[in-house]
Amino acid sequence: MTEARGSAGPNSGTHVRRAPGTPCWVSLMVHALGATEEFYGALFGWEFQPGPRQLGPYVRALLDGQEVAGIGQLPPDRHLPIAWTPYLASDDVDRTADRIRGCGGTVGVGPLDAAEAGRMAIASDPSGAVFGIWQPAPHLGTVVTGLPGTAAWNELRTFETASVAKFYESVFGYEEEPVVSADFDYVTLHVEGRPVAGIHGVGHSLPRDRGPHWLTYFEVADTDEALLHVAELGGHVLKPAHDSAHGRAATVADPEGAVFSVIQSPH
Image (cartoon, rainbow, N blue to C red; front, side, top):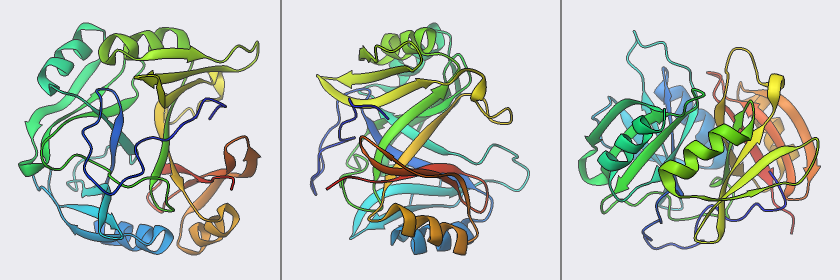
């Protein structure tokens, strides 16, 4: 995260149509749906209700009655990486999917209709990092932000920013703001002048078993307390709490290995 980090969305309880390229939802596919609900329910205070079942059993996570994330269950024979996936808004998923293919990316799932939620696809950029695209219908994605238990930021961890940033700029029309530093390779992606996501080039410090990937930051009231809860609930602390310009952050994994970060914003 950089000095340019901004809100991932309007702090509002009303449905707002997101400009193309804006992160609008996060979802997770797991093998043990019930156990995962227990983990995140205890950690973030989420409650759950059934969602579209096109991809199998699926629930939407609610915070104070507002939808903040989705969790689905993988078929037993699917051995995919367990990872949080951000969805980027699109006005036309089919056209965006064509653009992804034309720019060297891959569309792995869809485009397909997700009941009343809209139309979606799951894709990967040329380096292999997986992300979703979502053309909203009445269900427009996360509508509450800035509270503990909501997604605060999405950041692509990749080898280097230059080539992959061009891919996302070509597909979604982002404006780029690189960090001018000899030893810190970071680009902030802007939509309509507002920072919405980041790309962090970390070279060979990427985990060998993961490769390039998107990382979601969730807001928490107290980072150190959250880390204690993660451990008590069967998760793991991967990067201990540290202070940054945007608050106290740490990186953790849930019991199935899905990696995410928590951040306590400065007040």
